[in-house]
Length: 374
Ligand code: ATP
Image (cartoon, rainbow, N blue to C red; front, side, top):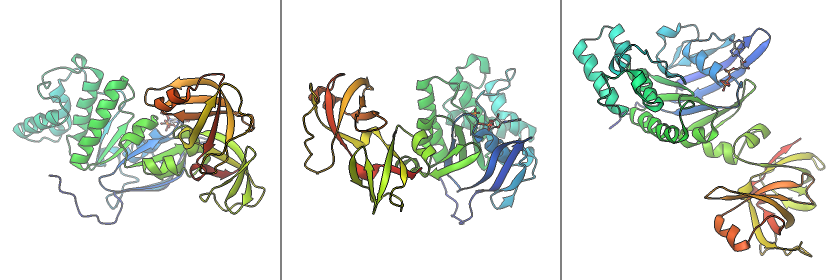
């Protein structure tokens, strides 16, 4: 069983106001972040947002322009990479092609001049840990991409680092291997209780395995939260749009948590305090819509559901069947944006006979709308 060190209350990794400039270009802007011991944190964001730069600064592979990095209570900001306590895995495996798998894993241990027998024992255990027992004598070129990345992982863990840094480790792998390996990384990380940072641009990957996700955009941290927090309570419009699917709609604040959206008034207790008349951007997730009926002709009048929620009419344009769910693309004449996406279960889809050209009536779960002043 894993022995978990006492929580000291001090974050394991503490990044304070980190700036990184390349000439006049700002790659990181005042990034502050605390990571607790044993956490798995994902840096997530679009290409060029600075996630790799931040990881490389933590590794000492890139010097920050200003700011500090503290690890395990020590200021490591100026420490050379070789003296920092981490193991790293890159997207491109970066194994030594002329060394066997075992020698790749043993590399750090051998350069530390650890006794031969002990090195062999450790390598054996590490290869077992990553599911590659028996592959020690092979060369990297004889392994699949996924297997090579397991070797890279074993090599990164060989020195029992305090911090494991993973820079898009799964990006080069095909979808099935990627999902399999990400779950194994998570299980291994939990078993070893090693503080881990993984850079990814794949939100599903981040949501699936992270304790917390750091959402970045243009060198700035937009939000840090659990996968559920960033999905359900996005802190900024960027996060609302970047994480999951959302319809972006225009609305107006009418005071006391009320908004008008597409001609209807909705009560949204989660809305921030807003001045009457304030223009709003409202994000509606496809699953926060309930479809009540679907007919061949446009309905004459909207039939309010039992809840009394306002009802909109929409014309079905096309459908995306995704297996577990079905996304309906529909035009809503009363919404200025017109085109929205609604989610149905396949059973509802069949039962209501939702087809292009037919008309449906739906209402929205107002308490789930993500609301921002424009
Ligand atoms: P990706 O997913 O594409 O790797 P990223 O979020 O990891 O993106 P970074 O690699 O951290 O992004 O780069 C952040 C920004 O800094 C990018 O706009 C990049 O062009 C710029 N940048 C990175 N390294 C340098 C460099 N050595 N010189 C100049 N600009 C750089």
